Image 1 (tube, rainbow, N blue to C red):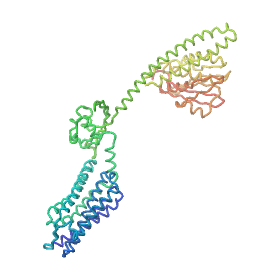
Image 2 (tube, rainbow, N blue to C red; image 1 turned 90 degrees about the horizontal axis):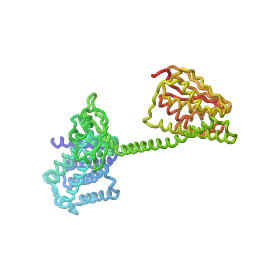
Image 3 (cartoon, one colour; image 1 turned 135 degrees about the vertical axis):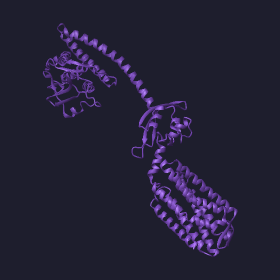
Image 4 (tube, rainbow, N blue to C red; image 1 turned 90 degrees about the vertical axis):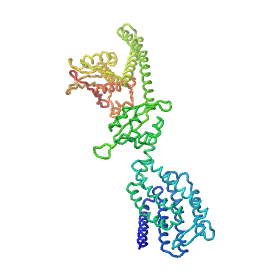
Length: 577
């Protein structure tokens, strides 16, 4: 009766192992699973031969089934070893020739087992006592078995280390699978140490199909054969930033390799289980964020290997339950190099500002002096003959052009600085426009242009005076440049809500649609020749746009090729807003 119940359980265990095999077969393309399938096949053969040995009565029959058991156990060793090496990523060091050699060794010893009746290498004696097969092993067999058990023990150790380094969510179930997998190994060691227990130990080992089913349930539950947990583990450890995970009790529960390296260089060779107040004592702000489980960012600096390092630490709360924070993760980003670059850029910008200030003074001052001298000469043109008159006119044009270009260049540079400050004030717009018209009077008279300032007296805007003069001067100079001799230019202003729209209209050569679209693009500076061959750097409109945008206003243009252009820009009107 007892044997029948035992037989039923063993057959049921084999059925479970077959189910395990067909379930694992679905994952055969995953890393290492092919070796795991071989292990399950060996266990099925082993369990079946144990049942057949118990059911047979003749010595020769029992010996055949015992040899099947030994062969199955022998092949479990290389399969398990290769499974572990591939799972832990060490299979790259194992060449195909070495794998063939490894299997050849076990095939050879298996053949020795089958032909032991002639060779007497494996067993000293083989006896049938009370229906049980009792064997005594030779010294060669014992040494080989010890090597096999040692190989499996090392493989289990490697597997344990691998499981311990994976993500914490998979660590506990991974150790549970390892414990289940170790049961047959422990039973075989007991069997090896006490050969007289061979029969009932073999029965217990057969029943391990049930523990194998539990292993399978854990494996499927946590998706051990999915690439996602492996990928998460790889990303976690290969992340270039340090990651420190703490629980609600403020103790460190996990960290990647970068975090381990960071704290080991600070003198903490093992930070697992340490309280954050001890670990982060020198950075109270970081410690406070992890203690309060609040999201935040803090910059820290420390000395590592006699080198000052600067890090940005981003702290994020962790929560798996609604409205219940269960820990935090700190992302440690090394910004030392970035900070060094920023400091160098700041130094270079400061040097650039100083150089530009010096150069601008050295260039603009002589040009301004020349401009004043040429104006004095132009006031007394009647006293010069025709030849000298032409020279003075050309010289005046060149000086005005050069001075205007240098002013635009310097103003553009000023607009690019972060510390540029505008000083808006209540400004009479008509007077400001009239000042620009007078400044460019000689240029317009040279082309016999009619410039009309149609802005009513008493029109006030709230704007920076220098910005208004700069923009009007540039737009007016642009209109003069592209308006033919005898043309007209009109400057007007129209109230629109709280804004005043200023327009500069000319009846010049106009622009094509493509030119209009590219006119205010900072990356493409366009310079066209005027109606009398006037040149330019193309910076006037760009500088005007920059300062209008700094003022919070807008600028745009309407133009038809051959009919002229109208430039518009807005200013805040009336009084201070």
